[in-house]
Amino acid sequence: MLGGGHNHLKHHLRYGKCKHSNAASIWIATGRSSETISSIIHPMDSHQRLYFMADVPHLIKNIKSCLLRDYIVYEGRKISITPIQRLAEFQEHRELKLAPSLKLKAVKNPSHFDKMKVSNALHILSNSVAKGLQWMVDNNHFDERERKEAQDTAWFILLINQWFKLMSSRAITMALSRRKPGRYESPTRHLKTVIDVVKNMRVGGGHWIPFQTGMLISTSTVLTLSEESFDQGLSFLMTARLSQDCLENLFSCVRIKNPGVFAATTCRSFIT
Image (cartoon, rainbow, N blue to C red):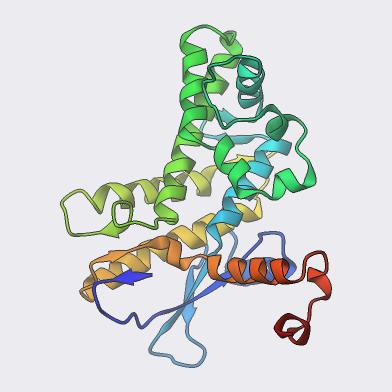
């Protein structure tokens, strides 16, 4: 999680899917508005704090799922799946594609398993999709009414794509660090911009969606932990180490060992 040869003294609590009842009750207890709380005093040690963080890969899936069923509004901008569907239809039968990883099925009629894949969410919320939308706008493939929505959607995709990279960094090149000028200021400025957007955006008819709380909690936690870590002399923070990938990898091992009976797997059956 952290580099520089020091031990980190803080704790953080991870929980996964936004729709899980336990996670929802935690979010309600810690605030689900613009004043969302990302940490509390540790219940077992008043000198330390307990940090909350939603799993970022699950959040990116929830953002994609939200777009598939509704639209997002932010300061006069409208973000929706419609321009992305138009892009997927436009390139469906072309040999050279603007967004090679974007599949029409993923944005038109995704199956239950398609919705569960993080890779599909990343393919939809990718830089190539944003650039493809802008190319279609520049080459008049949208009418006047659709142009603004396509540009707004492209802007949102770029914002979220960079947020995901910063929140799930696995290499020093993307890790938060104060070693070089601008290496820390630019990423933190982007993360703060995302916080502002998420606080003020609304879904559909003005609804607040659980993934917004998850994004606020997680982004605030990363910003706070990075500041405190660097003040203690740490060199960099690889944010992917704050995810629940280790737990997901364990689940994968269990599934491989007991294919088809994961729900009925016990500790005894897994070991034997």
